[in-house]
Image (cartoon, rainbow, N blue to C red):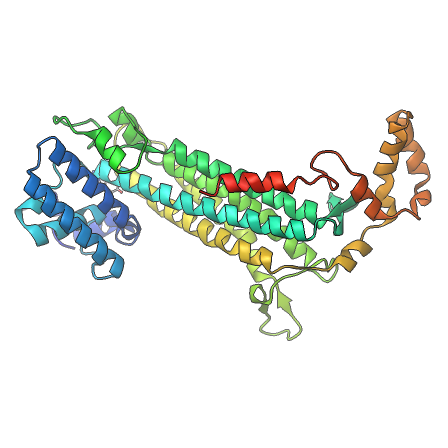
Length: 431
Ligand code: ARG
């Protein structure tokens, strides 16, 4: 490892201890690097505006940061274990390219607020991607709901046949769930839309930094005003990002569970796209729903990451190196969530529904509830109507379960799915 930024002659830290302290930073800071560079550029311009950096230095630094951003993107510059962390890498690259001007970049900031802002911008970017994926998943479910609006299937409670339902209702439920998740992600993004940059080590600095202007340049709407509070958002912010991601993963989990169940020979309601199933190494007859199973397992990763963060967040005010431990669960959790939700639209689009099998699983006794409601609407007390129907379930034998779909007119039910309403909500969270 090259000499750290804080190197003091004759006070070298043990090499093994250094490696342990750097932990996974080399790998994880590579993910944060593009955001660290953007924030560094805004910081430099801010210093220029208050006269703390000469205009000429600002220009040089901004140009060099643009180049570094391009080189990082093309793979020409790689964040490696040579540096203690990504922040040190940026300063070293600037100093290599510019000499004196590079050494001026860290005026008025600390790695503490540098990591805060890089993490913030990273979270906003990833939350935005996740929201877009949730909206696309909801739209795919909505397409399938529209195509199969009146396709009969059983509705279950306790996994027992309950009342007739439709593919429109079932798929529509995922469309609306993804809309809720997308809304939560949008709310989370606006909750974290604040700049911690300019708080330095967590106590401000003796310079009139243009914190508002820097926040504006970064596209953030407000500041975390109090420097100690800004510092204390570390970890809490990451936890909320994961919590919102977990919500959308929970929708994915319910969908995958339904699919694994309904794709069994015993149900036979659904066939998964070939590309989403795998063969067995020993049983030539098998096709397994591995993708749906792994999507079902993915929320546990996100939940595990949240638990890891919760264990970490037991610190007093001020920066503590412990907080470096917030990076691995954040980055892992969001990556798994984005990868998982990204597959959902394709999976939903590729589902084949077996209308015959689903209709065959709807027996007339499932109309008992409709019948009891019918009698009660005609004046019989509901409890009496319930008993009357329970004692004569056989009389339902000649009723058509499809009738039930047409009769269920309560708002949102099978005769009034309001798919357009759900679609409009999805559209409103798309941008
Ligand atoms: N890698 C460190 C972290 O993630 C960067 C900040 C280091 N600050 C310090 N005071 N040692 O927290």
